[in-house]
Image (cartoon, rainbow, N blue to C red; front, side, top):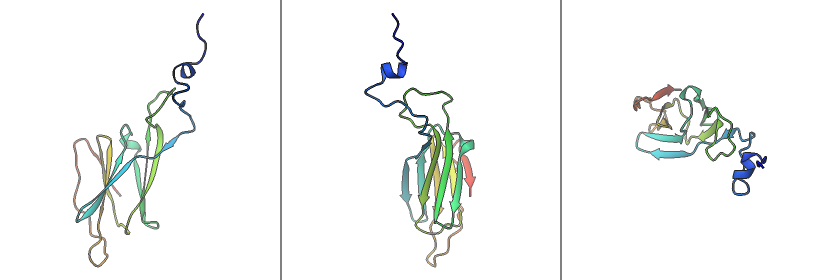
Length: 138
C-alpha cells in the first residue's frame, strides 16, 4: 500500500519546519567597510533579479532602502534560502547627497562619500564597474 502522507510531512517533519507562504519578505545580510573617502555597504543578494533591485535614498531619515525580489519559480516544500521580496533599511551616519551602487555575483555594493571637513557632502566620482555589473546611481 502506498503512503498517502504529503511528501513534506514524510521527509521533513519533525526535523525541519515546512516553508511558509507567509514568509514573503526577507532581510539581506550586510557588511560595512570604511575607508578614507567613503563607506562601502555590501548586501548579500544571490539569486536576486537585477531588474527588481530598487534603492531609495531617504534624506529625511539619513538612510537608504534596498528592495528587490528573488523568485525560484517553484513552490518549496522546505526552504532555508529565503525567496520572495527583500527589503532592508540601512541608516547612514551623516546626510548623503547621492549613492552609487553596483550588483555583481550576488553582492550589491552601495558607496556613500564621506562629507568634507566643513560637513559638505563631497561629490562622488569613483565608479565601480565589476564584470556584468548593473550600476544604479541614486
